[in-house]
Image 1: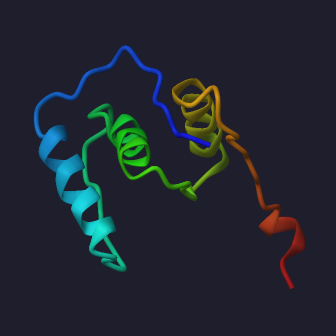
Image 2: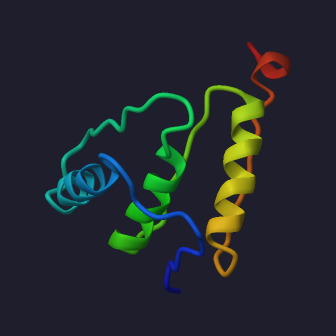
Length: 96
């Protein structure tokens, strides 16, 4: 299935260069890459554009449940024709 981004946002500022660099890194199979940006700088949109560009599924991990829910909602809007799933681990409850 094709990943087609649905958004009214457009790339601005450093986003085009970041997208290009990260896509090139993925195609070169770099094992680690980092996308840095302040709050509200468009990191989620940038990730969505990269997913569309490389046409591969992605695993997005978040440090807390609030951000995980926010990312889930945004990716559901960005990719309404694709499966976007949401999993929360109850680590505190199941700790050994």
